[in-house]
Image (cartoon, rainbow, N blue to C red; front, side):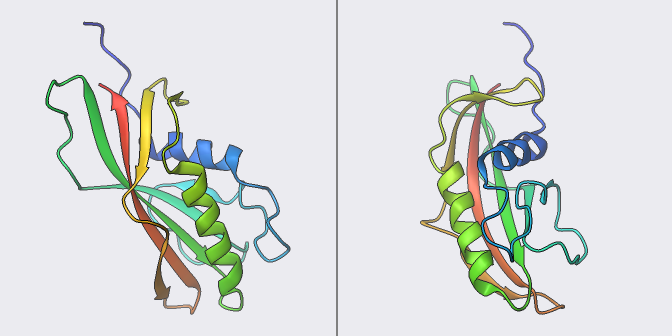
Length: 145
């Protein structure tokens, strides 16, 4: 069996979202596509809404027949302290863009089979230390392994 590329799930999903999200949901969000980042939540900024894609521990990584692997990721959306609405709208658009997403090839060359939301929608987790609104949702990502 040929060796498949090791996926960079964070970067692949961030690129997928950057292409799928509108560049200006409204004036408060800024450019959501440009403000989509792989990796953990970054320090507070003033660019409007931001999206972060982070791998985390979750379910077992290989299915029963060993062909497909799965990884858990958390999508975190942060919006300005004065705009809860922009954050929840963006978080819902992220959910809609990813949940049950069909097969695609990531920039890393990995073959993704499916993305599944683990919740029915984004979870408001409250303001951060700078009173910015934070929303999070876990996803399960299946890829050819």
